[in-house]
Length: 312
Image 1 (cartoon, rainbow, N blue to C red):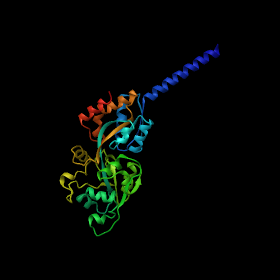
Image 2: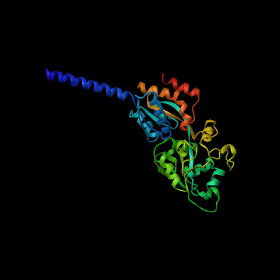
Image 3: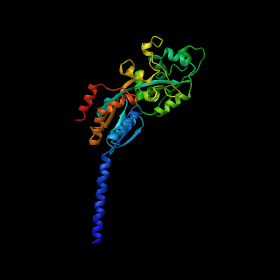
Image 4: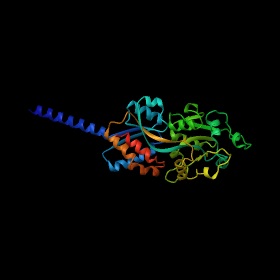
């Protein structure tokens, strides 16, 4: 009799443990992917848990390519994605929802010997292409006519990422066309650029600027884009000294698109977990109030309505 009671108790405990495990799995949201979206998703997860303390998050950055691959493989609930979704990816059954807008920023070292000249004249799209795509401009003197030859150290991303693809698209190419030393992730490329006075690279906004202060990150400067290509940075193009002005330029369409672009959540088909759907719905409603604070640009209300419709 005791043996039978023990077996019943053990079976009950196993059943309870299984139910608890399933509930925990349902209430855990896993995400991976774009460094561009990572800071905002971290902010969202913290704010969401204040209202939903039973929900857990597992978030990792590794580049947009990883986010898409993980999502399509079903390894994560949501991939964080930071470039235009291709037809090939759509053909594989990817489901997506837009969330916010940011941009890729060309960066140089704050120790660059010709920093003030670069900040005054900017660089044109063609000049960026000669450096990053074609490798035909390899010395700062070729651009600035300083009479003091100094080679350009070019850094790009080694991971498949939205930032590199978007930056390359601005110049008429693809990530695989980009020249330079490959560095993994936004933090890595920002550190490499800061340490090399002759360097040039690119970063997502949140890694070029300190969101709290609105100033550029220590050791990093911006290589301004001479948008109208007149050989000088006009007043309407000179907004890089304060992050809030950069965001305003992105929102107002002054900063080119690309490298400004929309950021997404992606999944293999419409998510089935109710906890995931509820979280996405929150990001498009209550969560939008945290976008500016986190250093991003809101999408339009018409876009929000469109994406909310995909959750029905």
